[in-house]
Length: 133
View 1 (cartoon, rainbow, N blue to C red):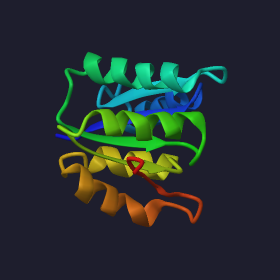
View 2: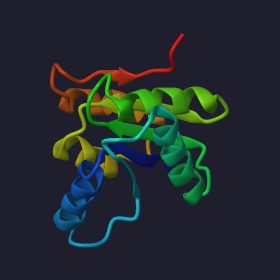
View 3: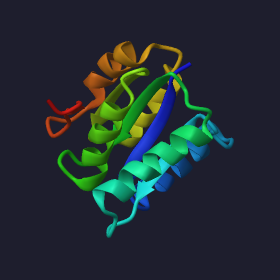
View 4: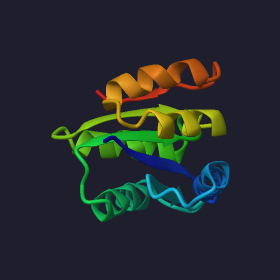
């Protein structure tokens, strides 16, 4: 099962999680939130992602859904992905309610397949999160 990590400017990740819980009528434990404070440094944001990943048991399959390409949460997600070449991980920016609900619905898919499936729910402002280099 693919772990879903929301990496967003605070409090967006928790708000999206609350929408998912409301939509499904129950608490959704399948979404991990790494809300990044406005004053977070890149290193602090990477540490936040690492912490939530470890709290989830270091899953070997991860999809990161981020909010804004080029912002600190997205840059931290890119850097974090580069720290863990041992896991199968993909990321996508431009997270929306439809994207997140679709990701929850299909999280049994491998990360690469899931991100491809999510691609039709993204707007033109969305982009893949990739490892630099």
